[in-house]
Image 1: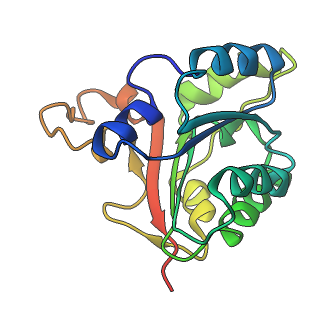
Image 2 (image 1 turned 135 degrees about the horizontal axis):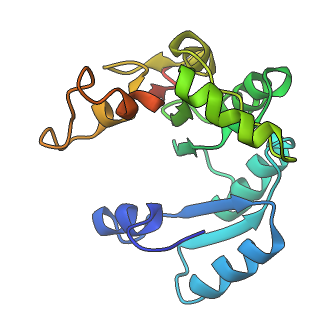
Amino acid sequence: LPTMNNVHEVAQATRADAEVVYVDNDPVVLAHARALLATDRHTHAVHGDVYEPLKIVEAAREIFGGDDRPVAVLMLAVMHFVPDKHAYRIVHRIMDAMPYGSFLVLSHVADTPEIRAASGVYHASAVRAVPRSVAGVRRFFRGLELLEPGVVPLPLLLPDTDFIPDLDDRPEMASALAGVGWKRR
């Protein structure tokens, strides 16, 4: 749900005509997002279900005009809600459909004792959480060049080095992992 300092704002601060597509399967979220974005002709909100990745790709292609310009696919705090049976296939199908030069930015909850305990709360509801190890998150980047520093605790990907915590002193900061992959020719 677009709020402040979201993807479209950051992208358009660098390049005013940057096209951004948000995807959600909740009609209430989509209605709210479309109302917030009504005056922004470069930012779009479309209905999509992560379990139907090629429909998402097609919706984005229609917006982008079907050309083969590289894109950035951001899958932030999404895939830990998808079981292994589907998760890797979904990401690989999306990235296989992307043109060369595209990027995948993915964040995911880490498989730590604290996160496993917290995921029990999700398992008691209709929503399931699947924490994954570094190796498990790295599998999402199959076929892509994993950029430095690789799959690491999320704060280590942030460019502002003043923010990077000492992960030995603050292990809770390692509860989310992230990486960036490049679809190189």
